[in-house]
Image 1 (tube, rainbow, N blue to C red):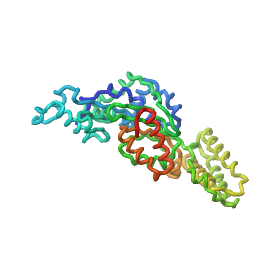
Image 2: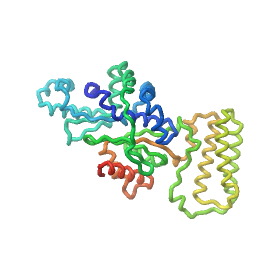
Image 3: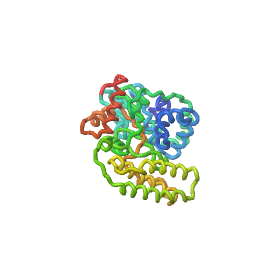
Length: 363
């Protein structure tokens, strides 16, 4: 059931820039301030060109961050009838609109239908573009040029801790877009289990991990466990420094080698004369050892980052854009503010709740 006759690109104009934020999050190591000044986000022309490249690659997932609702009882009745079999075209218009809305909801993954608004359907720009490609490939590619016509600046609505509310629709069941940074991949592995939401996450395949080190849980930092064994630290440092010598000899840009070697030297200097180590130190040493093997593999072993990343810990820092209808965001918040939820995802859920509350949305 194609939606291209019911929706048009202009329906999504208020939220198109959120797709660029989502996409740049995948390919950038920058924080939100950096992204909000990235020409591929804030410049109409550069944003349109960037999104056009994603369209060429059929990278549809980022377009799910742009969302729109439409009351089908407001559109032309002949258009509604075009979606229906002959035998039910004599039904009242609102009844027919309801049937079409339910039909779209049943065939479009992550579209949104609520019986409280029986003639209303919500879809994402992803749905629209996928159908447009099926219907008219030439028109599909030209649509990205038209995106430059919509210059709606992104103005974050508020921040709490790791979480920023960057977009909000309040019509019907609404739609919210959050930017979450400085959280671990362990946390985002839990987050993406909430499959009704949409995600764009920093890529370890395309983005360097050199300075993107481990997030250490509070319980580890608070642990009083200690090992009074200088040789244990020396063993870590000897391994790290041994791998470093191969990185120094690697046939790569000098600037890349200098960055890696400088990071390793700064790290090992901190542990040079330590007589005993805490659990937090063991986490840090193990993470740096993994990072040095990563450097060795990329620069000396000539292995692609997409394969080298297998050595990196789950606890590595990441950035992610999350979007969804308010009803599904609330579902996430209710489940993850439960005291049994792990500390990191519980913190983010509480931050989301606070940000929505500031916008008059209670959870």
